[in-house]
Image (cartoon, rainbow, N blue to C red; front, side, top):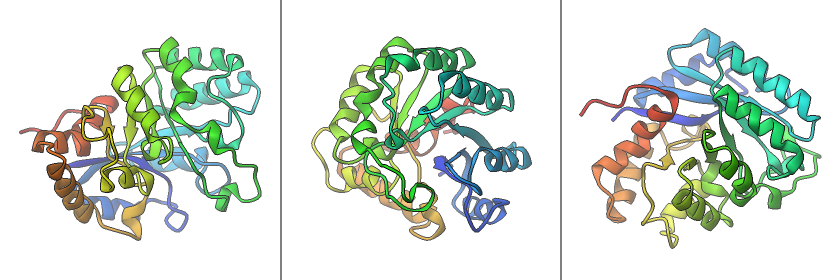
Length: 263
């Protein structure tokens, strides 16, 4: 089955993305959304470089640190939107509240630019680009996006890692109530809520759930293994092959403006 990976980063050890594209080829992953993260090597400039090198396969997502002045953040996302980026990537754990009233001009600009927003949700490891930084997981839960999601219905909000484990019920609530809210199923919490059959997930509309790996296919289960795992797991939940196809490909294709998989 064809797949779209909605949550990748530039691999530290593979800055050209060539090795990862071969992993995608073996797993029938036809496209991916690549997100910037803070710090050199995986930042917005690197995402732009790999997206420009592989425009038929890779789509860009600009990381914005909303602790910065709002005008700077708007200028940043506008610059990358002009380069063809489709999404804004956020890490509220760094210490900003997406609901804050001061950010309303930012969300208005994101909506006008036609961008999506994918945010890290829940717990964040204090390592790598985030080492030594103050991490505030309580700011990175889905309900902290409720105000901009209500005010800006043309922005599609995607909650990474299914909302972050401990706050997964917030994800279930917003996916059920707001048409512009989605979640990805990146490891670990994104798979955990399904592996543990957490209350509420079986009743979800699977047009709102997106497949993402956070590069886990590089050193963990292959894309083929993950496809088998999701097939078994969704069948056990009473989901259909159509739900599985939506999860692995069709939902992402719709958000990215690509053609749905032929039946």
